[in-house]
Image 1 (cartoon, rainbow, N blue to C red):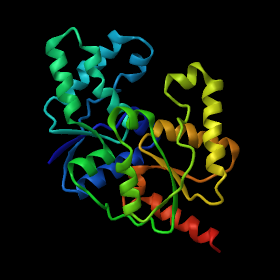
Image 2 (image 1 turned 90 degrees about the vertical axis):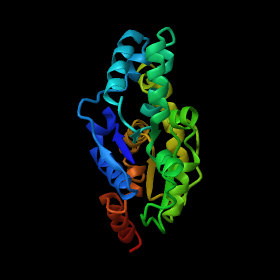
Image 3 (image 1 turned 30 degrees about the vertical axis):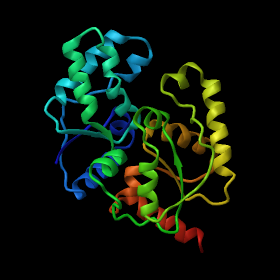
Image 4 (image 1 turned 135 degrees about the vertical axis):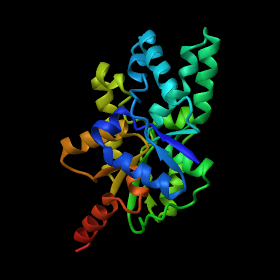
Length: 253
């Protein structure tokens, strides 16, 4: 099965480790993974800001990039959702609309692809004894239906999932820039719920935008668990799991 990895801007700039782990997971599941070097931003910032002509230009480029891809897999539910929304940009262009539909049908968020397409039940990672707080990305959950897939993979690895506030983290891309006070208040509510637990070993999500929002809040508070993209926790060879084990051993005395 041939897969093109759509890495996204945030992973490229802030967490390349997530991309490395995504490739390892896909290859371990038997996929032939390629990385088209001409890929760019998905166009979501321009789209959300109302610059639809600019978003259409980016969308056409990415549709060209992934034209021949059997599957497109991304470690971001938000960016994956944007590729599914390209049809909204091309309602008046039947040719481009068909291309947008075709791309949407072939595009999956990473955990969704592992579970729904590849039928992966376990990635071989060992998270036994670790308490993990999983955050639902709004775009991944509402636009792509990604909710149970990441939880299944984390639990199959032996993780204990912590029950906490399931509301939005407050990031929302441009929302956090245009309405920082509301965004920060939403984030603080999430973090208050997280830190109410006596012990959480790690925070994770399918979306790095959400993790940057919540992780930044934790760093400002100088309190709380480390955060990792879910690919890093599901990758049995990742340094993230080793770091968590070492931290767990130190705290256990």
